[in-house]
Image (cartoon, rainbow, N blue to C red):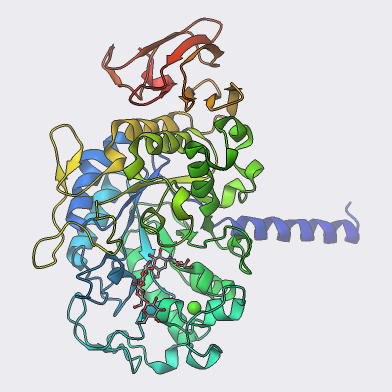
Length: 515
Ligand code: QV4
Ligand code: CA
């Protein structure tokens, strides 16, 4: 028989378990078929995303897509249609530069039908800038008056904004070390919603619930640092379960919150851990420094990559090499951030991320811009409408679309991540410099040469003996390998030669690339 004290302790333990369970409810991406990587199709139109899910993402094994904000936003003409107009909502009508509500619904349905999840970039901290004017210069012609804080289509009025609460003279955030300013004042003059009010919370939740009911799997929550965790807890708590047409009953939406925490600011990512995952901005900043070999960093120092480098706990992290902000100098990271403009080491960094077990990984898919004009919007026609994504015969993209996710080395590493899921980081090797190798149990192995000399070494891969196709220089095509072949002996050892002048100075093999 248990004593009453014993029962009491047991009850406390059960309550704790329940809380822990709940606190992980929003951390699961609900990926299908063991797929792992998410791709951000920045500024793509809904019709193009639907086609991409069917023709590329599902067959290649991408888990999901982060889409650009789907709500109606301001339409700016000076500068001409900047990409960032989408971060200034005017209404919650699903009518954006990427398409209308029917096109959005069709995309969500078609992607779900091939097992590719859709994650919505939710801009819920604010509406448009205070200087946004009055009229119908919005993506679908909905009237608003920024000066009066009047957004009649929702409706939001001045009562729904944080006016009285912000204590700075400008009304804008002036000091990031003052938590109250960061959360109650305007981020670059954007009209700040009073999310402690039931009415405003309800309108935001209605918007998100409409998307959940349409079939989305979760949200990137924009500017989370600028919202009180307590307010977000209530909003997330009022969200519906995911649509059971595609997801298990009782599934909570996947939430990943944008909080830039490079250390040294008053607000830390840890405040958001119980609520959902959080963007780990240190990851891309550090990996850029390592691959650029700046500040004396070496690839060999990444043996304990992940939490060992002071990153957040694995179960909380959403990781990426670059995002739509820091690839063009907005947001966190500075000039260490690697992008497609530095293609050779960028591919290595993305491969490293996809091979490594830490975090939920997001691949960036960009459009080109004139590098002195960081505001430039997506490839567009004269009238400002976004161009179709052009796909070339060799699977790459053109007409201004970069499609990093279609680069063979990156696509094949997204597959690698799927094949090695659940396997431990193993068989580490390094030369004390910038040549390293590691495996994922007996399912995959990768070797990098970021030194200025050749690599020529025999390593224990941990893989079953046989011939494997390197998925960086090529891929398995039936029984044939279009790239280098790597022979693994029955003892698991294999010989690797990688020239520092190779197009891609790395080699990767996995269980499904066995010939
Ligand atoms: C400017 C001045 C203000 C001034 C105002 C006067 O900066 O001080 O008061 O004019 O009207 C654009 C302009 C910006 C302008 C603002 C309002 O670039 O100069 O203010 O509009 O008119 C994106 C862009 C921003 C853009 C914004 C809205 O990056 O440049 O601002 O969209 O269009 C912090 C945050 C983090 C944020 C990051 C960029 O903690 O949350 O900055 N990241 C997210 C998104 C990002 C987006 C927003 C947040 C806002 O990833 O893309 O900002 O939704 O680190
Ligand atoms: Ca705020």
